[in-house]
Amino acid sequence: MNARQYIDFLSKIEKLKCHTRHSWTTCGTQESVAEHTWRLAVMALLCKDEYPTLDIDKVIKMCLIHDFGEAITGDVPSFYKTDDHEKREENAITELLSTLPEATAKELSLLFDEMAKLESPEAKLYKALDNMEAVVSHNEADISTWIPLEYTENLVYGEKNCTWSEWTMQLRAQLRRDSEEKIKREGKL
Image (cartoon, rainbow, N blue to C red):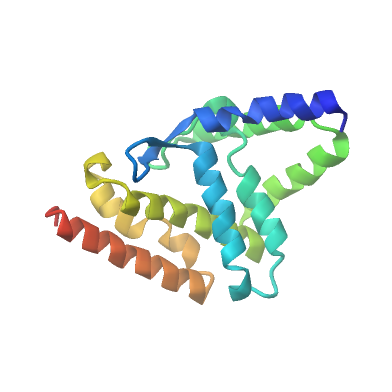
């Protein structure tokens, strides 16, 4: 990749630092897509010992690229996302990848395909962690930032994607307990 392509691509995905998500941080700022992506990659790195047979480097790559399309589309919370939103994000990913050298674009495209199919253990782990990072973020945020549907959504969000592994099921169960405790402590239960 030549220097110009490299810098131009970095400038395109820089927008991930600008686009905010629905969740808020503990210091009261709205979380950026880039902040979510960073912690998701750290989550993958930290659970490598739980999955010695998985290609954790591949999982980390999936975590790092999974929201590339949102550099163009911005983030839409999962509970508002439609098929049209999904299609626009897919088109944005195709547009972004087309600016990369062929070999890099092909490698990343194959990762996106694998992630979409959710068949490999690496894709399943990435997706489970992606869902759970959102729950962790909500559990950390002030409850005043929650909208009414999150009192139930935070209890179940991503459960289906966690059923493929005992470790992800245990982690998701702990996050549910944390959500329930937060809701009760804040007098919302």
